[in-house]
Length: 380
Image (cartoon, rainbow, N blue to C red; front, side, top):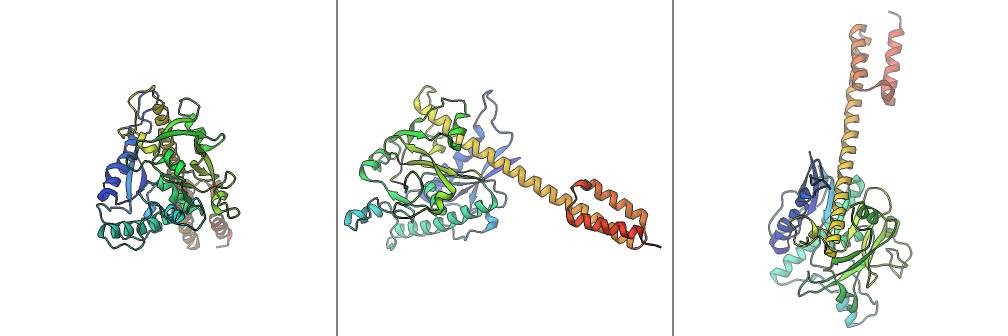
């Protein structure tokens, strides 16, 4: 049995960021162990590229559709090197600094160089594809996990925005010359799904002392909600809530769904702490080890959620198939009864009862059964 995780494609590093990092991280989930040292899951986790089958450095031109998520049990939105379309400046003043701040790491909207044209094409495709995938996943009840810049796309899909961090904030979170050199503490907010799933991992029930940080932007908030300061309640705050913040800058580090299928946006890179990945520390006593265990717990929780959803969908599909088979037997019985072949008709009814217990028959089956009773009572 497999749990399939759809990983949206990106062309960074000629597609290797997707194939050699994103998909490797997802497949490494299979190496997670329980307390006894046995595999954590009784099934295999498999990364599936979305759109299915694409690879390399060329941006695939593919309009997202409902069927792209057929057979997918969880949606994973990875990070990326560029700003998303809702990124705004911290300050709303119309100044040169404001414009530079707003356009920080933004893709050139009017590219002329071949490399910029490729980036612009990739950005346009990925933006629209991921937004649609998130929408379809929500409709289908598929769990969603998005990390770093991927969490901005998730927030954007729910109607939220991100802003460029101020310089003093950016110094805590982003080092463009050495992106993996910065780490900081994260405060978990009590009573949230993220806090609970991390504490069930069996590690210290405390905040995260040391998470990696590679981002220059952050979710826009108002009064501790995912709302814009210049507007009223947004769509995002109706569906999402903040579940973790940076200890130093108090900026958002994680948000999650308020109800329904689990949806998580994580600002740091929890996938880098999975087995075989570069962020996993060697020393169990290191502060980073606690962060690694809790980051792994994010993936184990979401994979279990994907498995439960898969079983639920299969259960519903099985019941639909049973109902259809039982209904067909009753239709056969009606034809036989109409032709006065009551012996074979009763056999067909018995087959319907075997296919689906009579106390669970649907209204259309009950109506058809009433028709059969009337045919039995009719005079010869």
